[in-house]
Length: 199
Image (cartoon, rainbow, N blue to C red; front, side):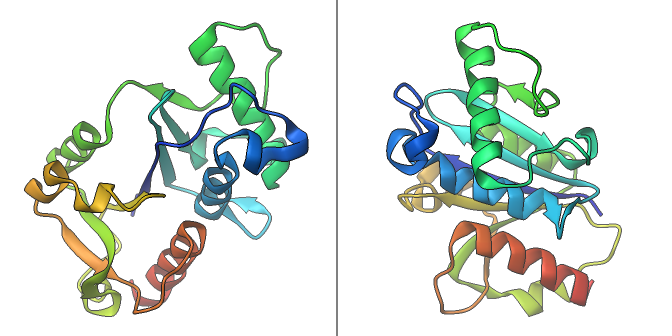
């Protein structure tokens, strides 16, 4: 099973970034970093066969593939990860010279989130959106098997993505983890945990 998460942010802005105030100086890049760690780290080790695609409106699309990073050098805390990610974004978008970082295996893409979803649908991935009003996750997950490849669209900080007309046109299955609202990073951990139990 290959497992992919999509998360989008309109707010991330690193033009005034400082490590002393990551939430306030980066447009909440700390939230994205937390999601990345939740997706590709298990305990203190990198997972296998998991990707998280980060769609940043101001900077493009960044693909973190757990199989491409070095387990020993990958930054496994939020502050280090964010700092290296900022360096990588600057290298990619501004052509600034920075030394090598443990995140140089990130893939950069110009695909927007809708085209990326369509590509994975063509690759026969089962694609789900996380929505509190969707089908119960147990009902959905119990129909899966270990050969299924899965993509979960987590949305964005504003909630606008899940209501976007272009996303609605794709007729994706809405999955709910229950009536309680969860942080995106917690949602990722819950999905991984329940997949391990049910599939």
